[in-house]
Structures are given as C-alpha cells and as structure tokens.
Amino acid sequence: MARRILVPIEGSERDDDALAMARHFARDASASIVLIHVAAPTARARDLIEVERFLDSETQALRSEGIEAHFVVEFGEPASEIAEAARRQAAEMIVLAPEQRAFLETLWRPRVSVGLLGHATTPILVLPEGDAEHATPALLGEPDAKVILALDGSKSAEAALPMAMRLAQVNDRTLMLVRVVESPLVLGIGAEAAEVQREAQLAAEGEAHAYLAETKERLTSETSLEVETVERSGQVAEQLIRLAGTHRGSVLVMGTHGRGSLARVIIGSVAAEVLRHTPGPLVIVPSRPERAALKA
Image 1 (cartoon, one colour):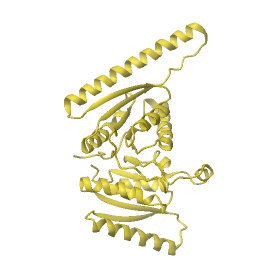
Image 2 (tube, rainbow, N blue to C red):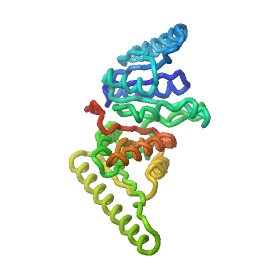
Image 3 (tube, one colour):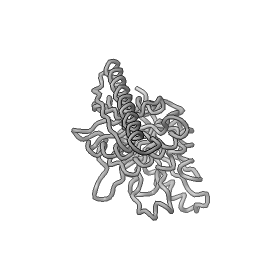
Image 4 (cartoon, helix red, strand yellow):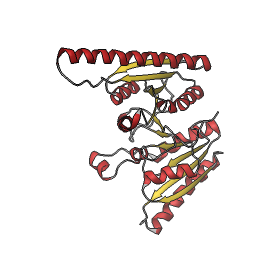
C-alpha cells in the first residue's frame, strides 16, 4: 500500500497505537516509516534532547524489524507542520491515534487530527479514540469488517475511491459504497411546499440510486472486488457513524470536498464530525493530493 508513512509522535499513550498500525502497513507493502515530533519554538534544549532520544529509540526498534525508518523534529503549529512534512517527505499516508480528552481540554488544546483536515494533501488514517481498557482493534480484522466508502456523486468524493479499493483488495474485504441523501431545503409552508419537498426528495433518492448502481457495475466489471451498495437518508455524518458502528472492525473512507464552495465547507464539517465520533478507523482523502495515495 503506501510506500512511505508519516507518524506524528505527540508523547501520548496512543503513540504506540499509531506505530502499531504503521508497522502493519509497512510490513504489507515494504514501506518506510517517518516519525515526526512538532515542538514549540520555545521548547527547552533538555526537553528536545529527551524527545530525540525517544524518537531514535523507536526508529532503531523499527529498523531491527527490517523496516526502513528515520525521524524528524520540526517547530511550530503541529497541524500545518505535519502537513508540510508529509509533502516534503513524499509521504503517502499519515497515521494518527488521537488521545482521548475531556471537553474543556479539547478547547484549550485542539486536536491535531481536526486541524490537519484544513492543511493536509496526504491521506490521513485516524484510529478511533481508545483508553487503557480498550485496545485499538486490528484493521479490518473482524469477520464482518468492510471497507465503507462515502460518496456524494462528485468527482472530488471519488478521489477516495482508489484508496478504498486498495484497502479492500489487500485485506480481501467487501467494498461498500454508501450514499446518504439529505432532505432538500424547500422554502415555504403548507401542502404545496410539502409536495415540492417530497418530489425533490424522490428525485434526489433516484439520482443516488442510479449513481450507486452505475458505480457498482463499473467496479465489478473492471475488478474482482465484491461490491455492495447502501442508500441512507438523513444527516450525512450521523448516518455514516451509525453505519460504521454496525460493522465492527470496518474502515470508513471519505473525501473532504463536495460540490461547490459551500459544499466544500459542509463536507469538511462532515468529515470533522465523523472523525470525532466514528467507532472505527477513518481514512480521510483530500480531493487533490499531490501524490497518488496508493500504489500497487
């Protein structure tokens, strides 16, 4: 899969989860791993020495397993520095394992994973929040696990399709194509407005059904993948989170951009909402990555 994987090290208990997942990908694809720590510009010299000792120790451990690895230390705002480092390192995936935080702590110290949505051009694999009692599940290790791809009918959302297909192929899993239709906004009240809304909803559902059917037919004719489709109505983030929860061990894959400037803002907020609440791993694929996310 990804030939070079960037793993941000924050000094939290979840760093081990991110490293374990990076190892999983590295072994499957003979990929290299780059560890990165972003320090504050005012960081003390003795603290930086400790950080570099830790990163060097982890790098040596990876090399002892036959995995090519090195580390870098950058200074500045974590999200932007990680995104820029991914570009400089030609990374094809960023692996994150956010630390579980209380609400007020999140306000004081925003999650790097959410901040990366506005900066990264590299696909991001975000592991679900965990704690000491609940270890991060193996990627696609459960019998009912699927690769769930969220689509909205746009080309930018389809930027996540190669990533989803490769995950399904490598792990021998079903690719589930999902389209969530939100209720169209219709101005007015009364029976006439209700009828207009009903017709608009039916039209949107019909378009979604035709799109999923065409995409499934194309993929099954071009690949050996097992493909299924799911149509839902309601709020996009809520439906995606609920669907991911019904298939334990599944991976949800989605792009960050939709149709038009306003839709880009909306789909970005959808990705952030799913990221906060999804019960399983989430892969977020920017619509215009600088490099291909996956290679055979």
